[in-house]
Image 1 (tube, one colour):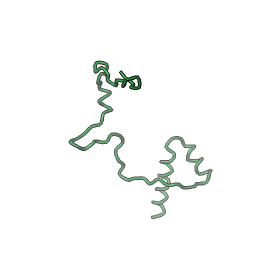
Image 2: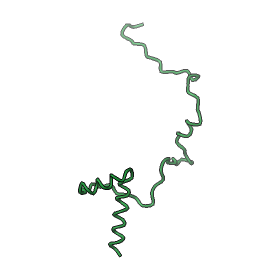
Image 3: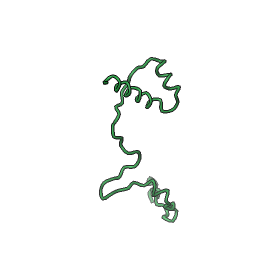
Length: 88
């Protein structure tokens, strides 16, 4: 054997050491219908939202934040209600 040659490490793993496939494994697996990947997670909303950057007065943001989790959705609802009143 040549002194300059290094032994190639083996990447083979004994298949008997593989983890068992459980129900939890299959719950996390990708699901296909034919060739199409079925997406997991939250379904798409009927009306999409647009991400943007805006600036509000500190007291406005603090008032909505003080209402707890979901304050941004409540702020959105308040703006929609204002639009309805304005249109009338």
